[in-house]
Image (cartoon, rainbow, N blue to C red):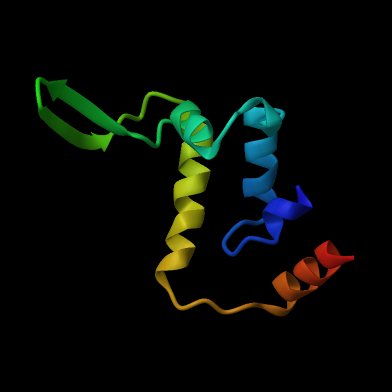
Length: 94
């Protein structure tokens, strides 16, 4: 959980939610599989040579998706590292 918290915008509640809802993240072969589990992949309609990608499917774990999206909003602003986040990141390096 501490590794999650070293990411900008991810706090204790977000990290705990992802770990509790998804379980062992090693069971996902790639980030694509995790995002498919969460429902953060585009809908697709393919026919012949044409391919249409629509909005996200929202066919996954809604609780994880909500906290991930809320954390992603943090990246809209210029990055700044608070003293608390700096301390968490420094402890990760040890």
